[in-house]
Structure formats: structure tokens, C-alpha cells
Image (cartoon, rainbow, N blue to C red):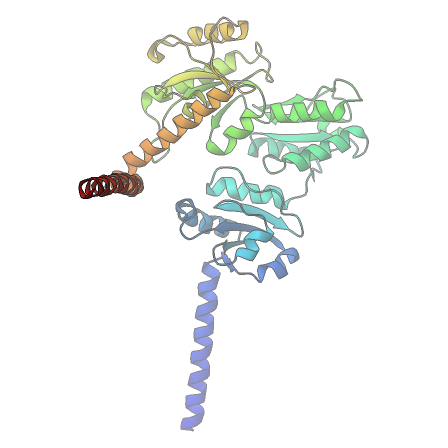
Length: 430
């Protein structure tokens, strides 16, 4: 009886331990992947972070990555991470060149990497877009209205899924799906949203209404639709971040930017908010005056984004207009505190008329100067963040280099003195 009781207790204890392990694994939904991942990754849908233990950006991303895993726990997307210093074959297979790299993997598709902001909501939205069909079909008008209340921006195709326009739209959806949502519906459903609409039609929902694509001709539909999608994929007045600034520069527009600086909890001061709101009012008032393909409005909470383009330190708050096609920038002569809606509108007219002298550009000397400015800014930022570590980082190599140079120079002097002594000795001996 005692032996039987002991056996039952051991069994219960073993089950309790196993249950505890499973529960602990369930709370941590990030899969630790090894080189065996190469054998199984084609069997599911994955969102994987490739990292290195020594990478500071990887460590900063880690708590965000845990939150991403929790938000995707009920989806078909499995969230994992790979230590590329330990499993180099995995990093080589997926072509990893920097850390951290976030990649969506489904079957044999893994060419695109995530280039947006490293924040939970942005990464989760990216995973949802990539996991969904390239173009999602909407069954009725209620679905369209629901999307319009949920998304600030999305693209919509209306009509039968055939013909040159549908093929071009499908191609654009595959090209931009990592950044935006693409949907389709029947012509009848779309006519309930936009009266007297043609079929087939492509539109973008943004700034509270649909904007229709107007094809230039049937021959160059691919080029004109790309131009439409590329230039219309941002709202009239937007927050410019590290993740979308590069995409915004690809549009070739003039970009009017309110430069502000957020604190650690993503807040700006009252005077900066007033300046930002003023430029947003200008963006709304000039919506009919300037084409959406010509002028884009926005604001930044990280001045370093535009400082790097302008290669100068701008005041906070201030206004800068950047030509995305050649990186020329324009700054008003008025002090930021004196800028009013009328003054900004007049300044924009002068920029379009060519009456404002631009700075910067994309010449080779300017590229070098911009790189030097960004390097200096990075060092200054490191010094403000941790002066002791920065001093050690740059002081130790400089000290070793000085010792090497001193040793080389001293060796030459000592060799010269030895030669002089030998010469004097031989001369005296003779």
C-alpha cells in the first residue's frame, strides 16, 4: 500500500511539474528558434526577429516584441526570434545583414523585411496586412463603411476582377501591402459610397472621403496607377516618423514640416502644439489650392530626422519645406514665433514660384557634408546620453593610436642617435 501510494504521489507530482512548464510556456508566446527552423519554416506563418545579444537596439525592442507576441496569440501568425550569433546558418539563409531585422515568413516567401516604426501597434498591423490576402474582398456597403471608420487610409477597387486595371491594381497591392491595406468590392457596392462612379474604378479613402484614380490612358495604366498609389498613400497632414520618412521621400513631393520635439512620453509643449495646429490649419485651407501630388504636410517629433536632411540644427518649433526629389530645403526668414497662417501660405507661394533660395541638395559635396553632420550629431547625442562611456569609446582608441605613433617616432629618434654615436666613435678612433 505504501509503495502504491508513493507511486501515485510521484505521478501526480510529475503531472503538476509538466502542467507548470506548459503554463509557463503559454505565458511566453515568443518561440526561441534554432537551426532546426530551416526545416519547418515553410509549414506555417511566422513573424521572426533576427537579433544579436550585444545589440542595444535589439535589447530595446525585446519588451515590445513580447507585447507583439501577446497581441498575435489568437492569430495564425507565430512569433519567434533567432540569435544570429549562435545560429549563423539561419541568418545566412534569410540574408540577414543588420540587427534587429523583422521578417514576415509564409511558405517560401520571405524577401520583404519590416521597415516601419519599432512599436507594438505598427508591427502588429504589419503582421495582419501580410497575413491577409493581397486584396481582401468586401461583401457589402456596410463593410465599406466599417472600414472607413476604422482606417485613416486604404485603397479600394470596384468592379469585376479582370482586365488591365485589375491586373495593375493587384500588382500595386503586392508591391505596397507591407505599408497599406488593399480591398475590392463590386460596382454596386461602391456606387452606394460614391454616386455616378465608373466601373471599374480605383480609389483611396483618406481625409474623410474617397479620391478617385483618373487614368491618363489605357496604355500606360501601370505607370499612372503606380504614381497614384505612391503619391496618395499618405494623409494630408501626418506624423512623420523614422519608419515612414524614407517612404515619404520616395514620393518626390514638396513636404512642409512642422519641427517639434517630443518628450519621453510622446508629448510636446503647448507652444509647439500651437505651431503644429497652425500648420495643420494651413494644410486644410490649402487643400484645393495645391494638388495632393504636389504638396504634403506633416510634423515630426524627432528633429534629428529633418536636421539630417538639412544638415543643420533647426529651432523647435520651426517650419521647413523639403523637396523630396532632390533634398533641397527651404526655411522662412521670419522667426517661428512670428509665423502665422497667412505668412506660411505666402511663404509656400514663394517656394512654388521659385522666389525662395533653397539650400542643401543632392550633390556629392552636400552628401559628404550631410554625412559628416549626422556623424557629429550622433557623437553629440551619445555624449549627452552617457559622457563616460562616450569618452571611453573614443578616448581609448585615440590613446592607443597616440602610443603607437609615439613609439614609432621615438624609435626613429633613437635609431638616429645610435647612428650619430657610432659615427662619432669611428671618427675619433681613426
